[in-house]
Structure formats: C-alpha cells, structure tokens
Length: 156
Image (cartoon, rainbow, N blue to C red; front, side, top):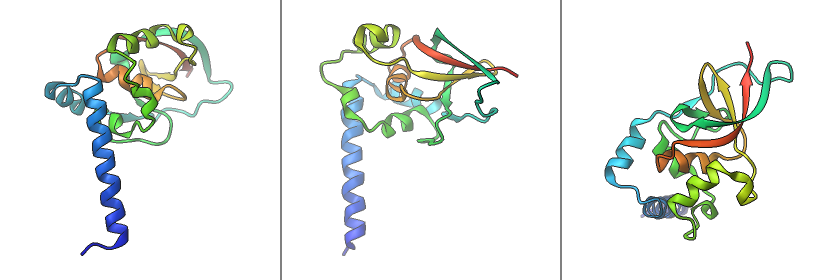
C-alpha cells in the first residue's frame, strides 16, 4: 500500500504525462521528431554574468538552430524534449494556434501583442534569458527556422 505522499507523487506524475501527450498531439510531433528532440542537448549557460557594462542589447532575427539552452538558472532537463515536458503554462498550447501561427508569433511578436523573447548571445550561441521560454521551445520542437528576439550580446 502506498503512503499519501507516494499516492500524491503518482497522481502528479500521471497528470504531467497526460499534459505531455497533449503537447505532443497539439504540435503534431511524430516519434522521429521526439527522437530528434531527445538528441538535441539542452545546455546551461556558463558564460560571464550579464552586467550593465559587458553586453549590448538589440533586436534581431536569429536562427533557432543556434539556440542551445538557457541562462535562466532552472535547467528543465538534458534535452529539448525534456524542456518541452517542463513547459507548464498550457495557454501556450492553445488549440486555436496552428503550427503556422506559432511560426508567425516567433517572427512577428508585435502583431500578436506579445513581448519579444530575450536571449543571451555568447560565443556564437543563444541561450534563453528571460521571457519567451515556451515560445522558443515550441519553435525548436516544430522545427521553426527563425525567431525575432531581443539579443543580449556578451562583450568580452
């Protein structure tokens, strides 16, 4: 017989598995897509801290293949599939959004009245820095090629 804590943990795990299934279905991910996401490492930013005098900020359209992880402190897993599982705000997986609309949101945040995602650029690679984790993760999962972001480029 399970303790109350074990029952609670099982319930949470089951809910998380159901949410992940909904995300996979909504994003039309096939088994080969999932395997591809599992093969893409999700890295923790290990460069210098961003201070007022060591970076410059600007808007840019970036190639999502150069987005490799996060500078947000919380690392949701070892790969991009685990990052998808960690995206908890289901409003970002609204049934009204098509795969094309996700790509449009990434390329033109102003038209959708959403903030630009923040990324750090360090040694030619991008890391999620502030808002936009869900949108950028979805972009990686659906193989979107680009996103318009605020780049915080670390200057050595």
